Each structure stands twice: as C-alpha cells, then as structure tokens.
Length: 126
Image 1 (tube, rainbow, N blue to C red):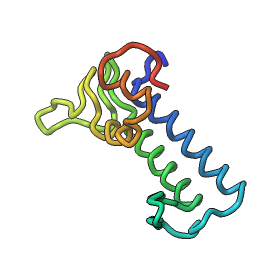
Image 2: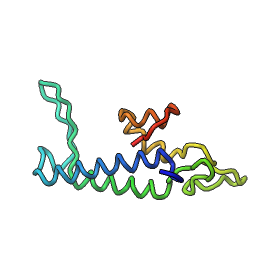
Image 3: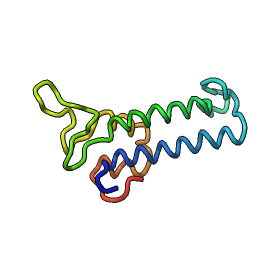
C-alpha cells in the first residue's frame, strides 16, 4: 500500500467484492427481476433492491474508470485527476481528500474499514 492513497485501496477492494458478487449472481442463475431494477415491498417488508448482473458490472467498471482518474492525493503528491484552480492551487493538494474518491467510498460507509479512513484510526482499511 506504500505510495497509494488508503481510500483508493479501500475503494478498489470494495469494487473487487462488488464485481465478485455480480459475477457469482450470474453464475448461480437469474434473480427475480434480473433484467431490471425494482424494489420489492411485500407484506413482510423485505425491501430488497435487485440490480441485474450486467448493470452491476457496468457500474463497477465505471467506478474503476473514475478511480483510475482520481487515485487520490498522497502525503507527498496531489490527486492527478483533480488538476489545479486557475490560480495554480490544487483542488486536492498533498495530504487532502479527493472529493471524487470520497464520493466513491461513501456507499461503503458501513464497512468496518471505512472508519480507519475517516477517523484517523490505524490499520489496514481493506
């Protein structure tokens, strides 16, 4: 993880998990509504959301492209995807959090590794 932004490592690991789940769901057969996004709200209040495997894989790839453009700042370098303001100051200077990267990490806030990213705790965020 040396030289990499910890949040970028965290997001990459979550995307690997999402890809595995999407591929596994395709291997085990179609789920109800596998061809569309829908919300199941029956009398038992399960409230499940089902997203098709192909759509889930497309979302993973789109997020990976964003992650490739915005790998985040490190202690010694700026986020290359964020560029600079007209006055020459970086949008995400060294040591700061790239807003694009933070947006990619936000859906995984319930993951135990997320706390190490946002509270300054030590440990591997993966």
